Length: 300
Image (cartoon, rainbow, N blue to C red; front, side, top):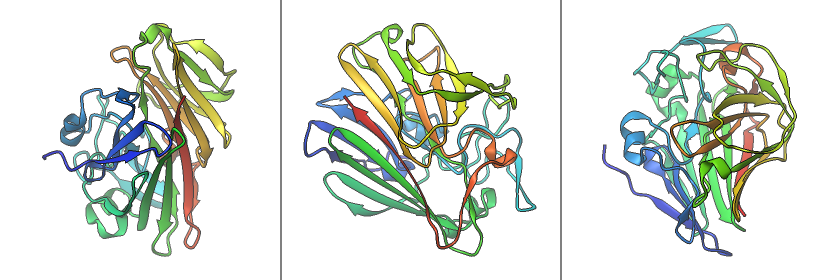
């Protein structure tokens, strides 16, 4: 598949720009200040389109991160996922990962301005998506760039009588340009840490995570959390540069990801913890009451 046309937003009050590619899953591929890039490019957009290899800021929908098996049950009905069908991808352990919208071409741009972009995906009109997540709804993403801040608002609107499980997230790959990874400082609020097994699935244990600021050094992270309150702020800084991720509304869970092989840190807003679609503990978007979540990335 060829690379679809990008859309670049500009902050009226600064030199900050943000680039989205609606035809490749509404992924944000760049958040740059006067050409200085703050998003990890990893393998690039083409690898995301061809193989679902994430970069920039992709949406993980309808579930974030992994599921512990290839089926889940909602209201007594069981859905079986088939790898390679309906957008389902699996990791090296064969477990479904990152939902089904990687590079999905079906987003429709409904509004576009210098500093704002609105796109809608009609889930109900896509039989291949309904096969993996049989809940008719529309998914709306509104992104706004202003005051050195990229704000992402996501709305789930049921279009039939059934409620829709809300288990998605985003995966911002952040970097501090011009500063060695070992010198980056990661700041988090106090949280509930959810330890995982060797497949990245929560074990059911809960530990206290005191939060605070700590140099990244040579640490690797793939840690899940809940207990995130609306308004909580995570940050990555180094030298005179700083990136803040604020969980403004509707993201009570988080994942922190810092791989050993790439100079990026993922600070992931999640509407429910990893594997919630199988375990429960998620909220539902009910007919007549759209579910709205919002997070923001601020470049200091």
